[in-house]
Length: 323
Picture (tube, rainbow, N blue to C red):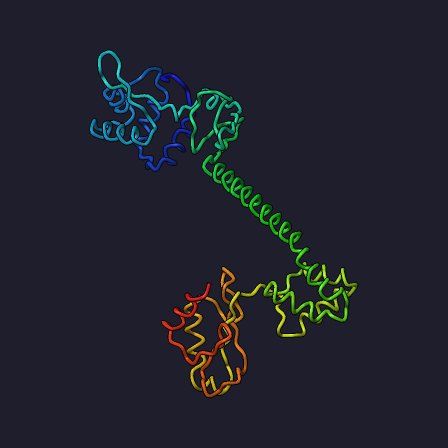
């Protein structure tokens, strides 16, 4: 590699990007090594450096050579005399195209960006400088690879979303048989719409949109009519609900007896707010103005039973007992 010419400004930029401070002595050494027509020993570099800067000592030469070798800027080789010689590293030189100002091919192989020709032996580098005409270009390979990795991750996520939508569609198609059975039970009559919705609510624990669309179409009822009934009655749910509903009384009698403390304990145990449903659709938490049993306040209704001011441990036991 000795004798390969390379732009000194580019070389100094590489050194800076490898975390080394460019002192005056290091600039002198870089200039000597980059312009040398043969591999140099530490003594050679010391003699040549002293001609440019008489203040440079031999200890500085050895210390700087060690730092540059560790940073991958230069490489140490041994010849027959077993004497250590130094040259610019393979990573620093890349290939003669760098210094000639010729375009560099960016090759994508195995989801990585490489420099050179397909099947070539040019090393992969995180940061590459090259000259094209009178303009220096900087290509941050690390950034390119991060962007490509992000694109790949997005592609995987899109495939996942697509598959989830396909599964939902398959489930909806299978649902139509269940819907038809309920509609047949009510003879597809519009007058029985409320009872149909009650049965759907019992079947699904809420009213899915595709059920409402399909029902309106099958019985000849406008969608606005179906939705107006479904949204008017509090019994009907237009969002997925938990298998078990927890209702806390927030009326005056229960409030003064600490219903907010009871509600907070439930929130702490289930990690959901009033009106929300747990991620596994097992529990839904709601509040009402009265449960009709003020003497037990503060009270909650769970699994068709009333509970008067249960403690946190009692709540955990109740919720873990149901499947």
